[in-house]
Length: 225
Ligand SMILES: *[C@@H]1O[C@H](CO)[C@@H](O)[C@H](O)[C@H]1NC(C)=O
Image (tube, rainbow, N blue to C red; front, top):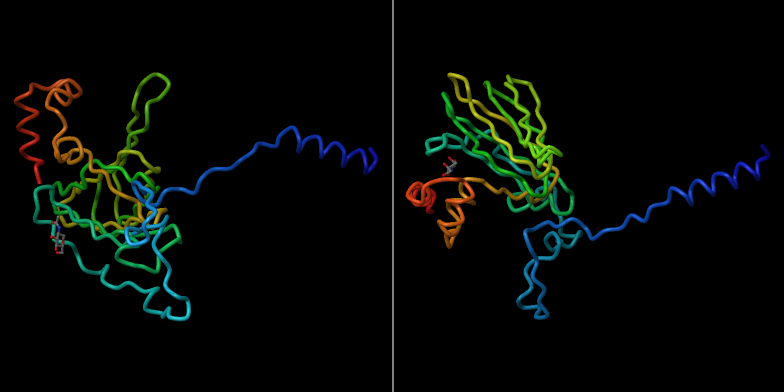
């Protein structure tokens, strides 16, 4: 083959396999209702930027992740978030962190999703049972991938999927979560479903969860904030 025929062949391949690939930027908040009034304007896709001439080393610094969150609450866990709202230097950089503390004997980070981020969970102390559930498989199944983790183990929760962690040990556990968004968002399933404000209709929840309406009302009273 001559050079020109090779080039022609490559050009043909490129033409055949070219797929237009364009989309809007990923959202960094749940929604962004447009406004024409600058006084009303709060967020762009991300937050406004500080003048680079005024930026200091402190803007790229966060301190305090050595401090344990208080796990004396009804689920026995506490998430200390380091997202763009706690750490403005993260703006537009696509990463954030969280420290998660778990009480001994069953401290639970309840089933939840991060609509905008994949999460890497690193166990710093203790033993956790963790898992995530897939979206509907071709056979309709939602598959659970779960595992027991010890100190130094890492698990990944793909973006948007429901996941949880529970302390199965006799001692407090601690994990570090690394997230692929400056604002991952958290949707806690039980709170969102049974604690929505105003409440989701009892009829809807009773049918969806195949529960007696009395049980639905009881659950709603528990998750009422
Ligand atoms: C998490 O811990 C912090 C610091 O101790 C505390 O202020 C906060 O109320 C705790 N949150 C929950 C949900 O227990």
